[in-house]
Length: 178
Image 1 (cartoon, one colour):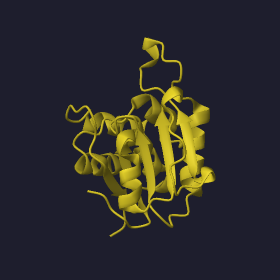
Image 2 (cartoon, helix red, strand yellow):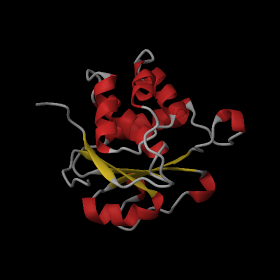
Image 3 (cartoon, one colour):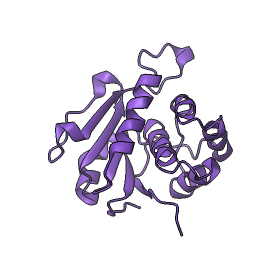
């Protein structure tokens, strides 16, 4: 389900980028795809509000040229923390399954430093049966956010999700309050 509240994070596959922007009213976009697939800044989004992270979803042992790095994950965390939550944030990757769900999970952890990692992971799983967060991205963010391995452990708890070629767009509220 897609939400339009300003303090929500929408997750989508690249093919549905424009549709989800229109449905949610997102004004900030984070694109996480291979460099050669990076989309132009969508209509209605300012270039300054479009973070482009060239990250491959291939495992490091398969020789991926653009694996996640501390630098790129630091950019993701800084961007999320700078987001004023005045409109939804849209995070997409190619399929809406791995990199975007990892980034959304990391975003929630960065914005909620006292919330247990398992609670964040279980919210992700409850909202998307197909979410399969990229463990390389989560592992680096775990170090940057000083979560002592707990971010990665919580993702392992929820597993890889149901098999799918493409994820269905969904949204996550940022807050974990009552």
